[in-house]
Length: 200
Image (cartoon, rainbow, N blue to C red; front, side):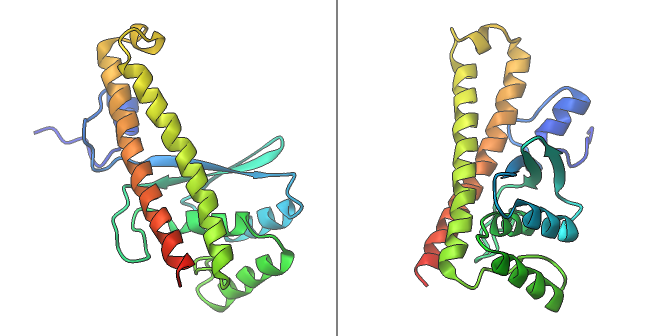
């Protein structure tokens, strides 16, 4: 039996030229922008850069800073959401901060504990829910994009379907379907988390 290692479909397609219809090692990458129009942009960027983990990718471009996170299919485990990186949830808490005081509280909390920034739920439940609803909106946009792309590939007379070799089309569908399942699992968990926090 040939073993290719614990690769996602994206890596299998890139390195070996094939994908699997069901790949337990699949991942989906989420890019989140932090706009320079935010009055707290520089403060947020500085505090994030100071505490950023190697597992997140960061890129600055004109008008915004983009940070990428890799997520896996979410396995339910209480409020932990195994599969969603803690760094991603920390980022949305920072991203949604509305005052310097709020950011400084996160920095102090990190210094007093294990040094990791915004890893604990925000003290104010409404702010915690607001941050995670921003993540929900981002996930929903990605889900809609993936669903539309799959529909276009499955449309026999569609431009995307006609212009692509059947094998390549199957690879693309496997890749998109795997990522879509991950995004949907993340959305379901975050939506449930928001509901739970809002009710406490």
